[in-house]
Image (cartoon, rainbow, N blue to C red; front, side, top):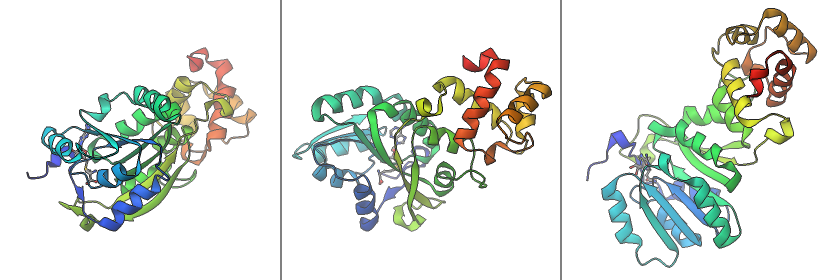
Length: 275
Ligand code: SAM
């Protein structure tokens, strides 16, 4: 079967990389692991040997059928689901994992790159039931997810992911580690879920909407993005001044704590911020 580029099929061929990715998820004994896009099963076999239970979600019907045959006799309970991971119920799987193992879900995947951001958002939405995820993505995306405030790569994706827990870059693979080789380098990162909304004193949905406003135009200053979102110059000056953030700063320079301070300072001027 030729690989389907429309489904982001670049299969991992480097045995050392497979071992590193599986090991990056930590000790799997007694755990339920969810694999996104198992493909031809490169990482799946290693996971099946180590985890108590493995659920693998693959969209391609022929790959899913092959995997079912291959894993029907494995001792670990392996379930191959043929479905779109974006329609997968992570919260239900996490609840099931808790019932069966008393522990949260672990997630792993060499992701189909064409839907990286939607997958990251789906994981964020289910963060309460997931302990950590080890994910391979295009190198530039990993650099954005793990960027520090003030750096070129820091943006809406960084701040959004960081709200759900710290992400750490682990290692990068060249195109030659895959068949067929992709056009880009690939980077593996670990995301440890620990949502920060309560600690920051902000509500989840309104704060995410606020971040979209302040990052709406990356090249614009904070003041200009807030103006575009409907705040008056006086309000912006009063709010930024009260939390000692220069109105001429750009959103990419601010930490999550500063965004939260700014949100709280602006809220009295705009009740819609809290909705
Ligand atoms: N894990 C395998 C490996 O490392 O060799 C395959 C990784 S390949 C980059 C991505 C896999 O995701 C492919 O098998 C592809 O068919 C599958 N895939 C693509 N879109 C998907 C979707 N929406 N839901 C689930 N799997 C998907």
